[in-house]
Length: 516
Image 1 (tube, helix red, strand yellow):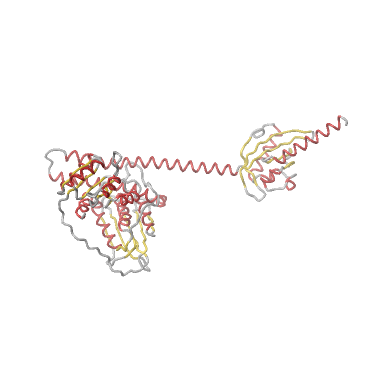
Image 2: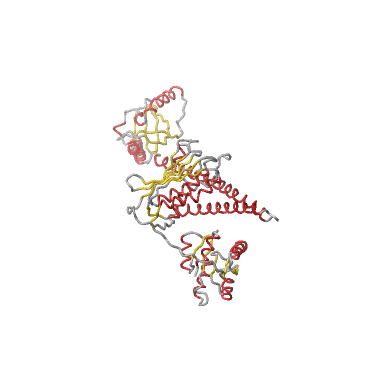
């Protein structure tokens, strides 16, 4: 075999290997000449663009580009051939491609130049980056959402700190006055009323936070019964009247004479309506008016509750966000009306748990707002109103054992109970509580759950139930653990009742009085 034949065979084998590489790489390879005509189009390019090679070879490469890029590509190629000025030769960049079906998609393109005896050519190595761009967009959107959540968290924490300080300040001032000597009775009465209101506000903030968490985890439990919505709305108005009138706002109530019956949880529906009235109070200036109205909708299938105010109103973008957690219409210092931005979100969730709906309406800033609740009525419309008769309980002195490791909580509660006429023994751990109980034989035990020393409240309750001397003694959980799971565990451990801190002293006194 001559050297010339050997060289030819080597070239043919080399060309076969090169063609095999080009045909099997995952990147598309497209070669064009100086006129822009496609010369080669490998199988990967066919998969990317949807064309067969024979459909595009000889055609201008513009067939693979969206229309707006045609002229720009032609100008660039002409200018490069004329001046040698290059912008994309030898480097990669992101461009747009156009498939046979007309769809536009993102491409990563690297262009190289080579020359043969037949002339100059340009080879584009390209990769479809649709999935990559989609993932980048998803990551960017996720990062934006996380940044927004982080911003909301910071705003909420700042708002929470602001609200807590607003309530703690009058409490501290009130304590200073209460501790001063010779305080006039009228001033002392006023201070006590202020402190009571602030404690109620703080308690409500904590309850709202817990309720939002419960609803988010679908852990909220409704106790539904046949409910007279007319009576409930009147009661909500009575509860809110004092707060509204203190702020110089007039409350107008319009309810029908006849009862409207729904199947609902009275506590949760009262909370939903109360939040709307509280919101109206915050955003209505003195001299304004809040109207609470209950009507039966045409057809008798639904009841409608309107809470209308003459307050600052809302712009249209805020109407769609009003029921989001932590949403506030105005964050500026001079217009902040207080609150954690949870009340409306809670109202929406609670109404929807009753198969109802809620929406907000406003004609704009300065035009007031209206919140509308619609609830399904019971079909037995003329059912007799359910009444419960309570047997009055005469207060009497009880022997009470209080097991509480927080010294201030224990001492303050002991004073409350002794003021009500009870005899109180205090233990600061579960073990000491058991020992005192065996010695004094209490009639009632109030026990914290989170006790130190390896014996928590659940263990105390279980120990009571297996002790013949204590097994019939009612034990009441008095705790900050307020989840439904906590209530279930308390019941299983042997607690007769589960009261959540801070307990209303009047509620505690009623509970103690009603215990056997």
